[in-house]
Length: 363
Image (cartoon, rainbow, N blue to C red; front, side, top):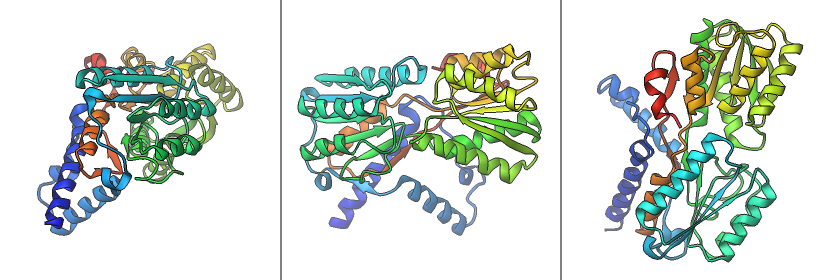
């Protein structure tokens, strides 16, 4: 019976993971094994093993501790990491608010750390002190939240993280699950888009996101690995942080153009930096999208609109609509299901072929 119960819970956990594609409003991607037919047993088994490794271990309410969360009487805290000048953060917070209302949460308390780690720590500690039954956290950094998570752990408050992974704290002790994109894959897809836009040749400058989080590291790794493997003619001549900010993306690009006048492509880790780069390129007398190819990650409406205008060449979406999946996961966890360590959502891609007709779906 124990084995059957565990298998049933694991199946439920996988079902919750599958909801990532539909609940967040993203288009489901067909796996290569589906595209290629049945294939060999060995190749299918290898593909399944890769998926299992990506999803990580499992966590249950019994293992984590605490009591089931009844939405009708629950107080849920959401800790936002950055000020909502960024469309990604606006869409992310709104998704949490909308779903909390939809599922009938008694009270949702939202805080914003305004890009200050110390404030996010105190925000979370305050939410715990106010008696929240569950926490949804968009971490500012992958490390550094340990004091806040310790406060939640002391009271057995389940913590679901979104968008950025925690690398220091322990899974199923400090947090239940991570919901977000495959950031390495985003970097690879951005590289493929850049290769297509440039023909695989040119000098690339990279506008890095903020340091200290896995998003920056993974988006860069995926991009660099992919161009190394597929387009050795693309040379990365500069990498500098723009801290995910539009104004910083502009100022950094201005500096890079002066020190590297032969830059022919820019890869930005988010749309805000890319949009700042467009201003800098025009000021320097360059035609963005033509003289200098521009590829970024996020999928904001302003960036997709820039593709339509011809100023940008491609954008890889990073889906911010975590609300539906976060609350479905919380409900499944409260019901005793085994929840996977990682739930990877599906992201669209925009380029000149689909930007105009897809503009309405961008955030």
